[in-house]
Image (tube, rainbow, N blue to C red; front, side, top):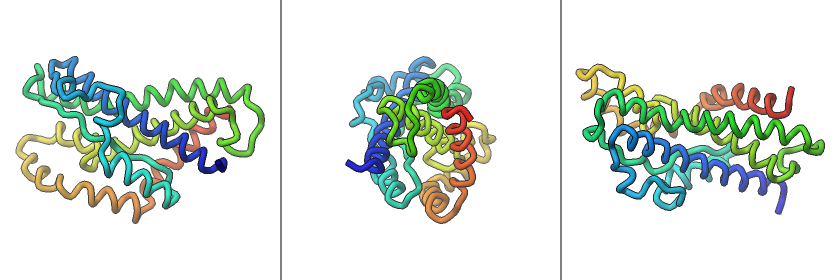
Length: 215
């Protein structure tokens, strides 16, 4: 197996775990607020199968890797029923934040661990030549950074769109609901035909790597 293929496989595995934990966090916070819909649907599990969205979890990440954009995506949304919550408008906002918030927390923990592991690792020319544990920690930090930031974009079906929906005045919601079905098309345009994601992610990824390698 080539070093490049190993890097892609390790990163994809880290991304898949990050996506699953992202979705579970939505369900756990919803349960905390009184909504057990995700629990009853079997979505509070580390088993990846119930979380897989064919396009967002498999096809889009694969296309991005082949196109040289790296990889990120989303899982099947966790079912949430605001009517079961004590304060639906406020609680749904916190539930939406739980996914990206969990990614940023996991990024911080794994980045600190990767920095400590990197200090004792041998000098190498690329990530794939690092000891496997160090490589996994580094890529897990990277996957959570990308996933957390990506999901905060204000485009349906991402969490950033949910945040906008929770914050909009009620009289604006009918217009927003008419726009939502075109969110995926807009997302694909942003990913494949603009440099917006590179402009957003580039500086953040550089900062993360600088922290891990101790620059």
